[in-house]
Length: 171
Image 1: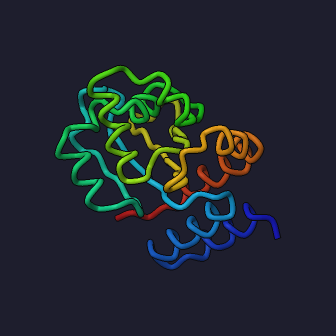
Image 2: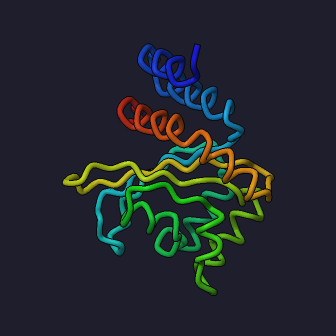
């Protein structure tokens, strides 16, 4: 059975959030991803990030440090989700990061092993809510291998992300 088909069956039949998360993890592990961040930002305004919601299997220490340092407001992956609808490879986000706060976000993530990945914006054109799903290869620093793998599996990973957005029950 194809990964996407299995994921659709698993998430459709999931009885609760834990089962949905397990379905997502099974699917992304097939593509080499260990960690994910699923974020919801209730406004397209860059300075209105007060009601940020995130579910993730990343380190709680990293999440706390990220929020305590105010990185949400300067994270170029978050900005990308607010302004674009195409995926952002982290190799590209690293290359375009401005010195200072944007680079601090990247350095903090790298300190926790979150260097290589992709952020997939998930939103509807006229909906003020913006969602994003970041997929992370924990501990890797091999951008070229990741990027090649993502591009090869892009369609399936985008489909998995969109299905997850449709079914995720993060109440």
